[in-house]
Amino acid sequence: MTTAKDLFIIAMDPVPEHTVGQGDLSLALAGAELLDLVAAGAVTVEGDLIVPGGSPAPDDRLLGEAAARITGEPPYERIEDWLWRRGRDLAGTYQDTLEKDGELTQKRSGRLPFGPRRVELVDTPGRHRAVARQDEGEPVLAALASAVGIEGGRSGDDEPSLDDETATTVVATVHEAVMELEAVRQRRTIENTAFANVWRGP
Image 1 (cartoon, helix red, strand yellow):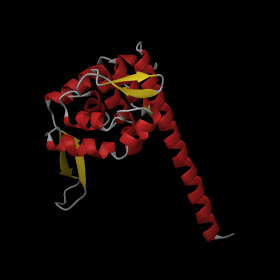
Image 2 (image 1 turned 60 degrees about the vertical axis):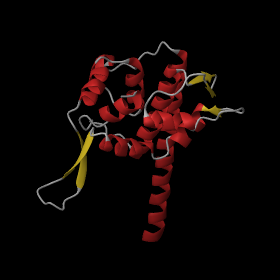
Image 3 (image 1 turned 90 degrees about the vertical axis):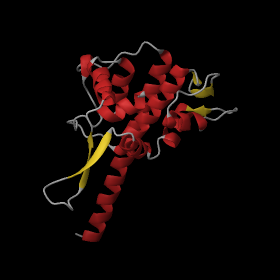
Image 4 (image 1 turned 45 degrees about the horizontal axis):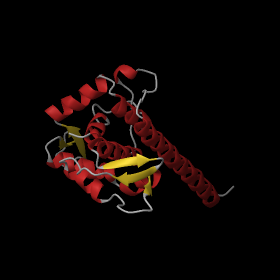
């Protein structure tokens, strides 16, 4: 399992008090992938730029896809731009992958056989590992989870502490991207409300 897969699992295990938006989670998953690639030596972070490293990506299909999309020559891509580009619909991609891997299953809601489907976690070693990392307050996972509103583990009410400069930079950029996405949502809500009021009239 990877940090991104662990993050997806804890976002659903169980349904948190704060429901995580697909867009927020997708940005955080892209950040988790980047940190996994850094840990493997497949990329490095120089300032706010993602620079290819000398090592291959970990043996994981989604991380392999992420590594293949890294800009290989100057001008290198900024972390923020990577989050938005790689993060597009990434939560859905992880859901599909985890379903194929047997980590998730779809069940009908309610008693009717044609009721709406909902996705549930399967009791697997991968799930136990993700939850254990969360309960232990593993800094990188806790920080990424906190960025999308998931709390838990030993970090309690405090912000997770990151000693690594690269992790700090990536997580901070994830926070900024999530806040930017929320600002976009709020602006659209205001615009839609104003438009509805125009049609409704005095």
